[in-house]
Length: 55
Length: 230
Image (cartoon, rainbow over all chains, first blue to last red):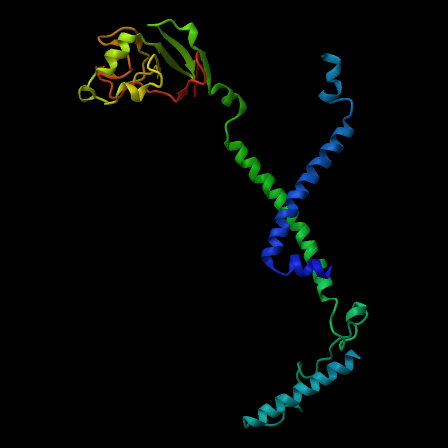
C-alpha cells in the first residue's frame, strides 16, 4: 500500500498516467467480459451459432 | 488523554495572548475575559479514531496507507470516467465520418478493355456523369501541340491526364452545369448544347461561355486495364 502510494499517487503526473494506463486495461476487460456475458445469455440464437444450418 | 492535551493547549495560547498584549501595552485582562475561543472544550473523538492514530504522541505511520485508500477510490472513479469519456468522444467522431453506403459509392472501378479507341463512355459517379475517353494517337498529338497561351484556363495536356490514352473528366459543363455531348463541337471533344461551350479532347474550354476546363477527378491505374476513380 505504502509503495503504491509513493510510486503512483504521490505525484499528480504519475497519478494521471496511472489512470490513463489502467483505463486502457479496464476498457479491454469490460468489453471482453460484457461480450462473453451477452454470448452466454444468447447462446443458440446468434448467427455464429446457427450459421452451420444454412451453409 | 485528549482532554488533558486540549486543556494544556488552551492554557498555553491564553498565556501567549496575554504576553503579546502586555508587550503592546494594552489592557492585561485577556485571561479574565471568557471568550468562545479561550473556553473551547475540544470534543473527544477517540471512539471514532483508528487504533493507529489514537495515541497522539506516536508517529503517524499509517498516513500513507490511508491516503492510498482514498486515492484508490478516486482513481477508480477516474478510470471509469476516462472510459465513459472515450466512448462518448468515439461516438461523436464516428457520427462525423461517412457511413458505409456512402463509402461504397465513393469509388468506381472501370474495365478499360471495354472502351474502344476513339470512344467516350459515360458512367455515373457520385451522382454526376463521368466521361472516360479512349483517345487516339492523333488526338493526343493535337492536344499536346496546343499552346497554353491561347487557352482561357491554361493547362497543358500532361497536367490533365495520367496515361495519355485515357482522359477522365466529370461531365458537367463549368458554365451552368449541363451535361456536354461527346465527340461533337468545333474541337473534336465535347460540346455543351445549352449555351454552346466547346471543349477539346483534353476537356479544356476553347470556345463559348464556360470559364473553366472540365474537372478532372482524382483517379489511378492500379494495373493495366483497370481504372479507379475516387
